[in-house]
Length: 55
Image 1: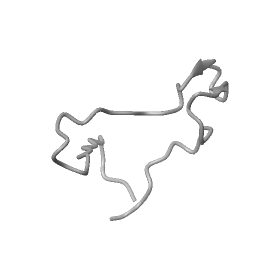
Image 2: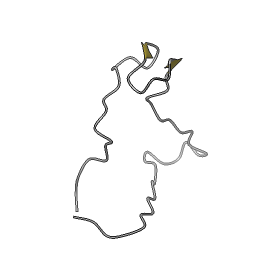
Image 3: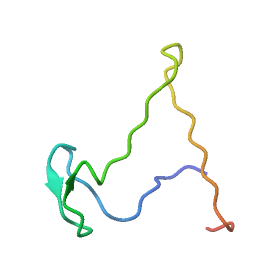
Image 4: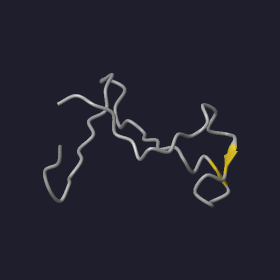
């Protein structure tokens, strides 16, 4: 299927702003990032493992 993975909590558009939504006052805490090992690809593979199938 096609969808958006979310926990229902939205961060600021600017990751440098401090957010205290979850009681953790750290800059960039609400964001996730990654580094590509190769500049030859224009995509990042993400693998999610869940304990059960859900709809």
